[in-house]
Amino acid sequence: MKSLSACFLARNEESTIGRAVRSVVGVADEVVVVDTHSDDRTAEVAAAAGATVTQFTWGDDFAAGRDYTIRRATGDWILWMHGSEELLPESHAALRDCLGRENAFGFFVRIQTVVGDAQPQAAVTSDLRLFQKRTDLPQLFVGRLHPHFHPDALDAVRREGLEVTPCDVVLRHPVSSSRQRLTARDIYMISFCYWPRHGGARISLAWRCIRRAWGICCARPRQRA
Image (cartoon, rainbow, N blue to C red; front, top):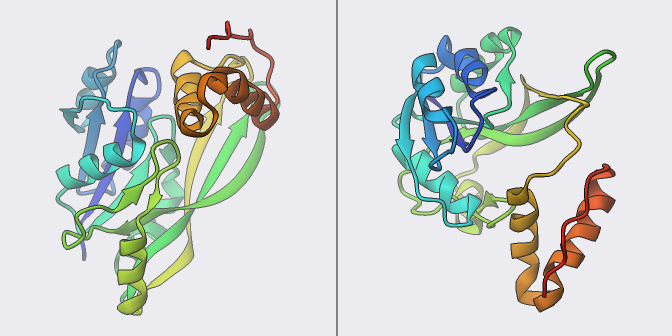
């Protein structure tokens, strides 16, 4: 059986990272948490839950953070997770089955986002979160805000005739209905990506995009040139 590394890139997630790590401890051969110098106890909580924790200096680049995290992993396969997610127990068998599949590069995992407390509602999407670790490719991801697979990695997969297919693995992402405020880091990262094209209007434009995409109610930040 091929080995599996569950990988996290985290910051200020002490309230959820422990649950996330514990959800994969029984099925992953190792759990790697790369902490971007959190202001809270994220690193301590992750280590206590069973993860190997490393610090990484944040450089406004999620793709670089992912590549660094994956380089720290030793498994044949990578399960990429966020610190607010958890692997459902009923997905363990499906996950092991994926690791035994020949001629597969990766699998689309189902992401179950559960919103609300009293009457939760779930939305299901899919994302390529389970994939082979490729030591022959120096860079797997590109995209500062929304990391995605590097074209060279995709070309290698096509040349080798490897498959990328859906699977029955489910990651659950609970979202409290009381969470109605974007963090300053959320706003900064989105505005950062608009800067090359829109110059001084980046905060105003990014804020309009945030409100349109998320449809949430929160305090409007002060605009700056």
